[in-house]
Image (tube, rainbow, N blue to C red; front, side):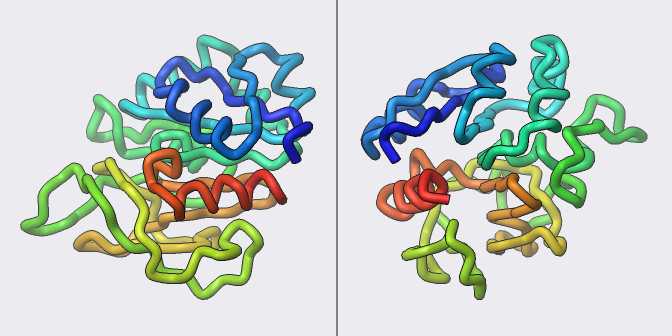
Length: 203
């Protein structure tokens, strides 16, 4: 496992150091790159992201990463904003009458969470619930806690592997073919987050 080539896609909108360190603790030395040759040669890909969907998609387009990510056939894991970019579209845009087209890999739309009197962003530890036996969730019981920081989320769809609730149910982990998304920050989620990353490396 330690010999596999793991590439963290340099989206220009992520805390790459913390993501890299999370994998180094698991015995893997990832490459951070936005070069097509590195991305195509990778055994597995990580799509991190923080900030706004508008800025993130602009960065992906400017760096000509959109076709590379869409064409990827190796396992890919996006988390936090990286997961949101994998969806079909996002409501997080400057124009309230329009949607922001995203990568369109995972079905469903990213919507502002309607949480009633709860505060946004949804920040802190929360439980995920699942009844799946997918290898990505091996050793992660339903009810495990992960660390979230977000105001927008993917609705629950047929691609949902695990869900969370913060005033409204939303997708915590999604899966479509070779692509996975986690709304939380696994690199900040302690033992459960490390186990999820380990499971991804073992897929």
